[in-house]
Image (cartoon, rainbow, N blue to C red; front, top):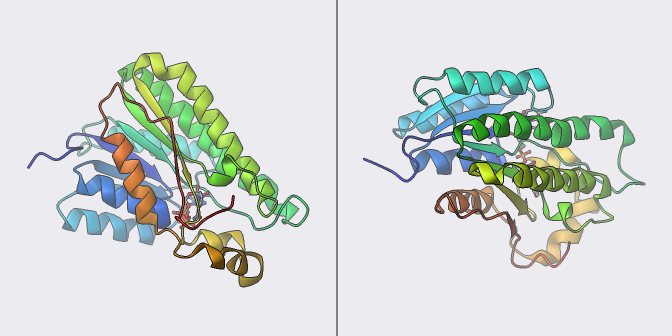
Length: 252
Ligand SMILES: NC(=O)c1ccc[n+]([C@@H]2O[C@H](COP(=O)([O-])OP(=O)(O)OC[C@H]3O[C@@H](n4cnc5c(N)ncnc54)[C@H](OP(=O)(O)O)[C@@H]3O)[C@@H](O)[C@H]2O)c1
């Protein structure tokens, strides 16, 4: 049966958990062959098995999203994958991590690592994917930024700065490649409950109390739905950015 994304191959980084996992499932359900990437092999293999058991196509590739050679290997694997037709059409640049605290209170020993993944890794992936898609004169790059990549917060100022960079790099790239038929979209999630909070070091004290007033927070599916939607639009329509918050999230 022909589905919305039949014949397309989507690469999704950070697919072992949260938003990336939900996005991989959503795109696969609509017929995309998905190349899923993260460091945790078991998680990826489980997800690939689930997708394949439901009639989809999936290839898991392990690697570090902050290491250029691993990103290059991911793209090479996608191009060498016969099931995917030896090409890729969609790249969801999602792998990333948070860091609790502002410029004063966050752990400075984590700053470089955070930029390595969130900024340099994301930028390298966007650049390499765009070089390829420009040659094909079609394709999509979806970069996952954050609401704090638009509205900086004193509670996550350093992390937020990395997401300002993601949004800026994606928009700069959009202006370079849009005349070649390549769409670039920035997705800015509000608070999504995932493994993100644990990795970032959020606690009841520095996070839980503050967000209690926001009511029901987002599940990763809400962001996956947004990603899926913008990819369904006709090729001449590019939703450049989309911000998805829990309804009750008044800040930031
Ligand atoms: N959750 C939120 O409230 C929220 C809000 C705004 C934006 N975001 C952004 O959304 C994206 C996804 O977050 P999430 O909420 O889904 O978090 P999550 O559940 O913690 O998932 C993060 C994913 O990134 C992967 N990852 C992290 N570091 C990596 C590395 N060095 N190399 C390869 N993969 C790496 C993880 O896989 P492995 O650990 O297996 O490598 C995991 O699959 C991130 O860019 C985050 O900044 C999240």
